Length: 75
Image 1 (cartoon, helix red, strand yellow):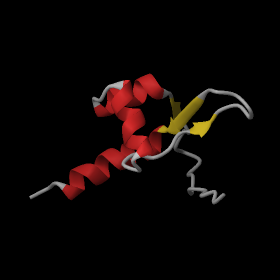
Image 2 (cartoon, rainbow, N blue to C red; image 1 turned 90 degrees about the horizontal axis):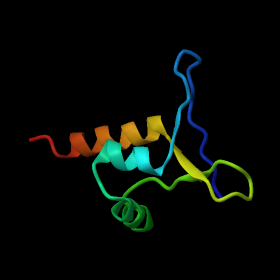
Image 3 (spheres, rainbow, N blue to C red; image 1 turned 90 degrees about the vertical axis):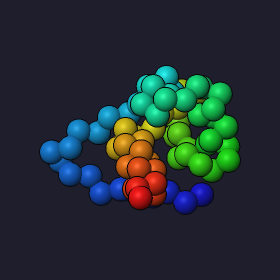
C-alpha cells in the first residue's frame, strides 16, 4: 500500500472533513460522492480510527480537487 505524505506548513491548520461536508463543498449527493470515489474520480477517504468505520478527507485535498477541476475547464 502506497502512502503519500503531503508537505504541511505549520501556519496551515490541518482540517479533516467528513462525508456530509465534502458533499456540501462539491455540491453532490452522498451516493454520487461514493460513486465518484469508486470510479477514481475523487480522492479516497482515509480511516480516522484504526479498525473503525469513520472516514474523512483532508480539507486541503478536497480544495485542491475543486481547483484542479476549475483549471481543467477554463477556456
